Length: 459
Image 1 (cartoon, helix red, strand yellow):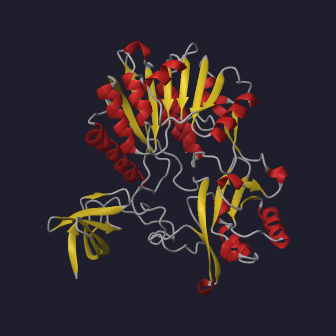
Image 2 (spheres, one colour):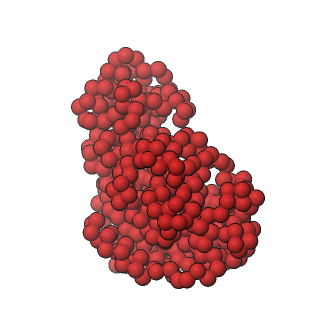
Image 3 (cartoon, one colour):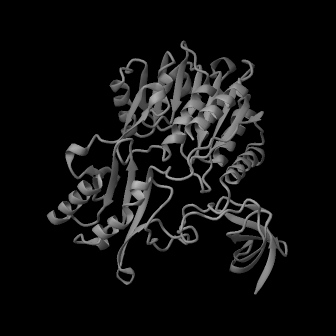
């Protein structure tokens, strides 16, 4: 039985949110403000799932999804919504998180950071499955239900030269000796090379290896192999071990990385994000700066171009080593130093042992920086950094940590805003700046003007 619903909002899985008989209904494919006809596909105690049958009154923000995989693929769930509206929803999610979780509010919301909407994804994981009934090997993302692998000929969010490889990749992998034992391929694109890491659960034959080499030569890609866990990742040919890097031209830096290292998926937005973070930090030449959860030095080394000293701390020894090597490559070993530590278990005594920092950047994983936030909140006023810039991939944990810094530590949440790192998805990347005491207002209007000019120039 079908029924008519008024769609009130959109959740981060791209579903319209409505109410029927006092119960929440999530409607696949519906947008805020629309009147739709739908029918229930799943009933739960606290909510229902529904499928849209007809749009009776469409939203002015509805657009035709350009990707032919849209309705089945589990990736770009918001392609039917205009990009500007997608960002507005993410900004509202961030504001709501601050209000309801952190019980705080930024003094100013920064303008959202935009970048390319397609061809932006330089890292991805493709699932592989050998299905005789579907003609052999399938290579692509999983369907929205998560059970099956999409039979994809193209993907609009990865670089075009990689999208063009999907069909040849399917045909080639299907000829290997055990195509049924190849569960996934990891993509990593650098500024001058493309790496495909093949997970294989059975040893490759000599013929398999030659097939991969021939494919790499023909299509200009480099193969890495993963026979077991992540620690077993290695290049098919040892001479290909050091091909991946991305440049940060504003800071005269080249950042080498391995295909298994964490890097941002969107290189364009990453460069803009570094610019914004450093402007918000407002580093002075005499400053001593900390970069917590520093990874391979993505923020640390740019900060080191201005600061007197940068200390980068990271939980992964592999990434710490990578950052140390990058510092040496650029002659920064004395001014940028790195160490390995579990930042989920630190306290204020550990911070005191590190010494005073004028500025701190925090860029944690989705779990946030709970221990670090509590430690900074526990320091006395003269021990605290003047400014903290927090880059987040999870608005809920950012809001939680903001509440600690503001309500327990006395920091002021000066500004925050979203970064559209993953267009067409529900992923919300954001940045926030905290100020200790009264050190003067931030030059946010000037910052906004500079960001706007550079983003328009990049477009």
